[in-house]
Image (cartoon, rainbow, N blue to C red; front, side, top):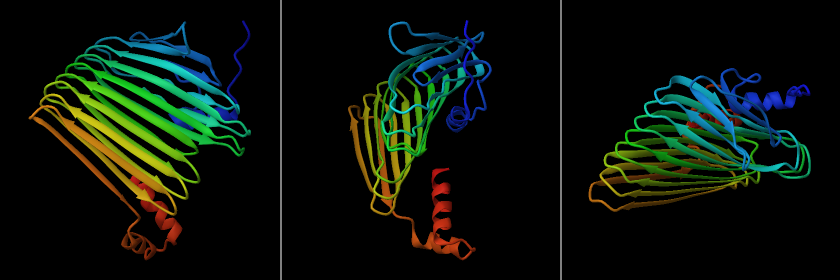
Length: 311
């Protein structure tokens, strides 16, 4: 068997950026590099299987698994690569685990590079899942970095899922779609952070069906739009039972950027409590002045405010 090619410095940097890893991780993991499976490993309680009919993996986490994690980063370092992968996650009843994903693209060519993924989560009864996903792009060519994640979530009775998604550098175009269905007493919490600049475009769409009694969803998007970039936030929350739903879009707009927030909430039950909040505005002048009196110039003051806003 041929020896596996080692990750080069560019690939290792992408791995650090998207998953805070300094090499191939220990424990359960799947690492995809330039359109191919680079390596994978299962543990006693977490089984990872490569799909045979299409690109992607199936991850099975045994019932009752506690305080374990799995890393599934994707990195692209060749220009012109375009891929679509399908990853299915089966979280057993009563498990409590962390999944760290993310995609990094290094594109120094003239062709567009694109990673699109369909991630389906089936979270069992009373299970708890934290899912962390970071998107990052870099390169000095004319080709664009494109990422289009599609996340499908099914939460069983009493299940809890927290999603933390971050995109703050180098992604030219992204369309993120999240669809979730909640059963009795299930909870979905989403924290999204996005920053766009130049001519970049970012669209996020959340569709949540609150079907179970006493289930709830809390979706918060914080974003910064600079230069000529454009952002679109869409939320569609439907309450079909006694439930609670809250979506919040909070954006800072700068330069010639454009930000749109389009909320929709539908109550099909008299005991459904649904709230949407949206705020779009520039950095307040008094915030800048306060920091500038401490010795920062205007640009430094802006960066401090943005970093704190996206923290």
